[in-house]
Length: 362
Image (tube, rainbow, N blue to C red):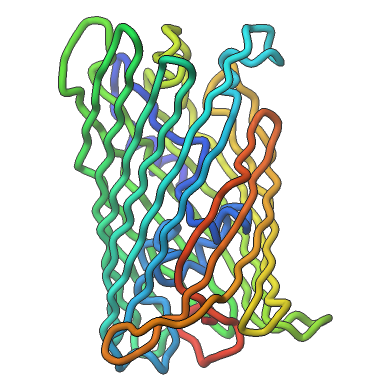
């Protein structure tokens, strides 16, 4: 079933720039938990993972106008694998940065939100910039056991080298998903359609299309009290499948003047993470792992290890006379030839001590 869905989303192209990222679209919270959390996704931090996140909130807040915010920034370094010494070719190291923002507005059982993400990869005089924007709407049924979300997304990529400067723009991406909630256990499904982007200039030396692959994801989570410590805890496990791009070529390879096939087969990325609120209503610690699949024949997959924490800071006046408790997140993500050690996020604090729940605990 999954293979059939992703195959349908794959168009026939002679050559297409493949735009999947080595840094998943997540918040600093998500990074610390191994980029897992599809079924836990809640508020602004969770919108990167699932479009139902704007309506995932406590039952007692349904009668109020409220909202959440998050802002995240990261710097990283990696080997593309195209020119890594491990594979017998000259070493090619890339540096980069990610900036993400999310915000929600919630009224009664429904909510809406926007996600903005921009990434920059550079190596010497070569640079790749990508942007994604997601506009989301979500609704929770009265009993809170089913939360549904939909979204529209856009994608832009710019490639700059000493001999080339081209921008691809695509605006036909949709996403939809559902989270099923029962007694602290959640199950989530997510579908994101393929985006095809066209270049602003045409030429024989560049592919006529760039593609952000289709995505199908399934995830599960548990939230409750740790049986050993009695502290609020959560666990999450996801499986993310990216669709094939027929004729796909690596954007990093294109920047290096190399023809490197990428994304021509469906790939799977398992992810797992956990969190423990070691100081109630003040401090959480996180850890996790995820597998970065091999989208290119030249590059083997990488197993990542992650860790992070979140600290509650203070509250500020917010919508409809309510206060917004703010917090700071920090996370690290490492793998062979990959380092992401400066991922910092600011956003809304969500303790695991209060309830009852729509979906995950807040």
